[in-house]
Structure formats: structure tokens, C-alpha cells
Length: 138
Image 1 (cartoon, rainbow, N blue to C red):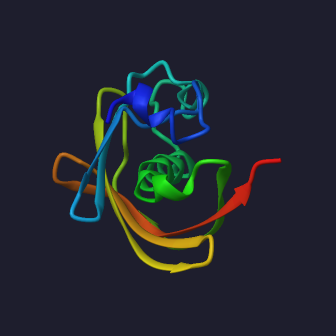
Image 2: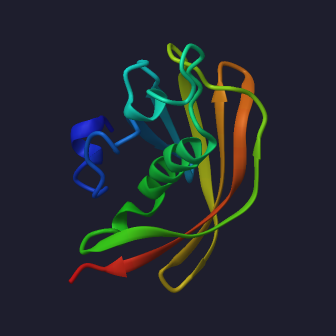
């Protein structure tokens, strides 16, 4: 699934749409985001040595994982309701392509629990347990 199709499920739009493609493989969402270097979040983080902020890595993982619950998304917006055991292991810099993997581990009503990780090549950059709650659009 490419960006245009992703937009049919996610409410995010540029500059906050941070997933280039996603595929579903046996209950696992595998996606990619290529860091171009001109993203707004790199402008001041850090001058002369741009690094993708950890909070943005969490957002990238979250957007990728929301495709796992795409059938529940119409008419609803996914909001983070928690982050657990999030760890940052390596930097992500301009020119890197992030590979994101995530799977749903539990569901309670419209709340979803997901384990996710972000890697550049074989290096683990971020991982954690993400919690989303879907809220009806009104």
C-alpha cells in the first residue's frame, strides 16, 4: 500500500504523514519511511547534525501500526493512549530508510495494544509497546 492508499485509512496529511508504504504480512505491518533531510522536525534538531527526534520515531511506528487496524478506522481517529517500554538504540539521520514492523498484541474494545520496532538496515533504532484508542469522529 502506497501513500495515496494509506491516506484512505489514516487522517494524517503532509507534513505529518510519515509512512511511505506499508504491507500486511501474517498480522504484521511492515512499512518504510525515507528520511529526505528537508523535514520540518530536522530544522532545529540539531543544526549541523540533524537527527530524527525520538517522539517522531514513535509517531512513525504508530502510523505504520494503525494500518493493522484499518478495518476499524472508518469514521474514527486513532489517538495514542499510552507508550510503554519505549527505548531508543541508534540515531536516524537524513538519507536513512526506516523499516517499521508492528503487530497487535491485544485489543479491548476500541483500544489496541501493539508491539513495534524501527530499524535502519539491521540496526534497531527504536522499539516499544504502543497503545491506541479509536475515537469516533463528530
